[in-house]
Amino acid sequence: SPRCPAAKAALEYLNQPLRRPPLFYEPKKKNHGLPRNPFNSLVVPRPIGWISSVDDKGTLNLAPYSFFNAVSYQPPTVMFSAGAGHADDRLKDSARNIELTGEFVCNLATWDTREAMNLSSITADPQVDEIELSGLTPIASTLVAAPRIQEAPVHLECRYLKTVEIPGWSDADSYKVIFGEVIGVHIDDSVINEEGLVEVRKMGIISRLGYDDYARIDESSIFSLQRPKPR
Image (cartoon, rainbow, N blue to C red; front, top):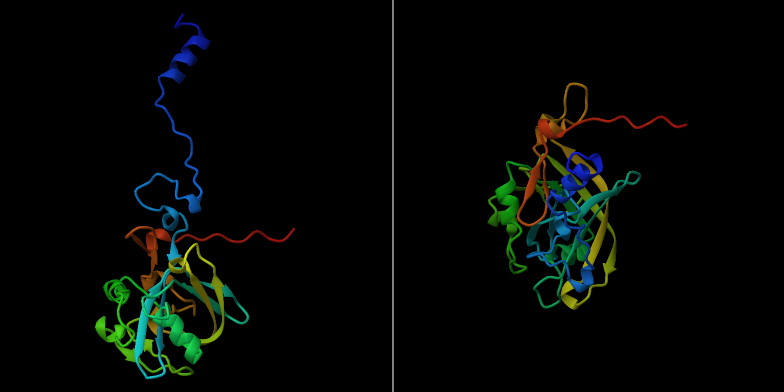
């Protein structure tokens, strides 16, 4: 009878919409059944390393990398991962330049520079200067030959440390993870508050999500948590 509690609960359960089990797939089998690979939409948000470098002929290069992060404090060290390029040597210009010259600069991409950042991701011949192509302003660094981007609020001058090659499923899937020690830091005075702290809210930093999507760090997306005291 519907008046019976057990029968009522059973009816409510049966009337619930069917719930599909969580999706499981094995990346190498590409058996997710979705229209696009979901992996880049799962590890998010990813900071953008906007890497400027120069080759041995003096040609400037600029490219954004979302496989980027800091990996240590002392010494401060950053890394970015570059996939296969379209040149004959199968290298991205950034990777080739950095391994050749031993230097690069990481510039922080912001909301104001989002269009220029996107334009600098274009696939172009090694002799193309993406800084000029993107309408940006190169300025001299203090310790390295690679230029900084004037429009960015923060620049990390880096000395190349090492490359770790990640074997791919094919030649097109090979990645070079490039590590660099941060030997010089430039911070625009406008993003340092009266207490001497970097005011991330003022930077308008953007980060990479999946597909064609990005995120913006602002007042509404920031919150604070204090780490628990040791026990």
